[in-house]
Image (cartoon, rainbow, N blue to C red; front, side, top):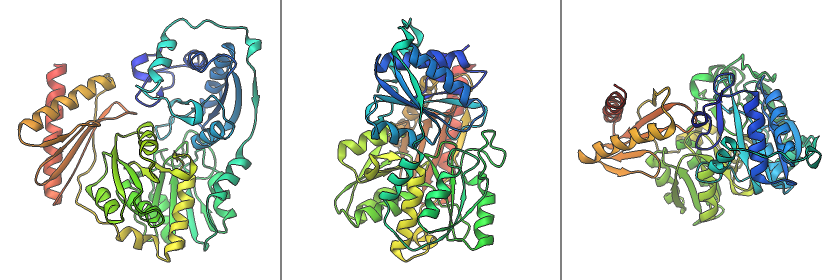
Length: 459
């Protein structure tokens, strides 16, 4: 039933369960992935808390074992826990059964190789896709075996070994009924913090709020932070690789435009001249703040494979995305929302300031809203083609173009970014300028140009 071009995305395999793929797809992908990794090799498999996760995981493991792989099933775990297990045990690959921040009817597969390096289009995922659509010869299933193992204790000890002891804070956490339930609370309490939990029962239907920890979904967290007089609030997505933050004033402060400068300042105070990586979606203030702290700003394409690769290339001390994925050199450049939470608390404690003071110290420029134009039925390549055509139009009318990922068009007022989403059937558009009116004007002009190009191609 699967539409291969729909489920094989830029950085993972993902879609609506029962519409875009089913259990047979999961088993076939397990065979394709196992065949790509190699018979006799060892892989880690985990899942988030979605109701479809267990049977998808079982079928994926069945497929991998059928081509001779040995599988260690670590059960319900965050995606960063899977990364940790693959890297720590020197396994040959791993898979997290998750759709991350997508709605509960979605599911998917984040696939990694040695050292938990994520497969992506242009970086191995297309070869797995080739095996998936081709003939995959089975081997004697006795060559492969599977076993279950918990790594929770090892993972928690690893995180805590990377964080120094600091003054206790009052913290509210919102795991969003996802894979962070229990673990985030436990490690923060082990560090001596006073922790209050909302939406803390694992439930992959996400009854309390959507899995995406964006501002529109964390109103309960804001209220709880204010009512308890907490120092900070933390929200996690479904597989706990993305962090949402609320300061003590109840403000949502988790844009990478805010968090990357705060983390960069911390790391660059200890390692002057180090590189910090950020994605093309970020504000101009991110580049400026890194330079002001004596660091080297390095811009990257959007997506964790791109951020991690760029961090390795330049030896960066820290990296992050506008979307609140945050990457740390001391944990092998992984994006881990629970580690990011621990590290932010360390920074607040070290600074002697409130979270709100750290936020207010970051320069900000006026921005537009984020516009998402849905393009149902148009794959990534078609959407990217639309973006490129709009970029050519903007260049003709006088914009300077950066096209390392989508199109970022600059003029004297500011910039507008137009990108085909890696994870949803949308084209995303946002703008930043000297004034809010100018940002909104740039946004609206770009939206009209994109819609016109879609009409031209589909009518």
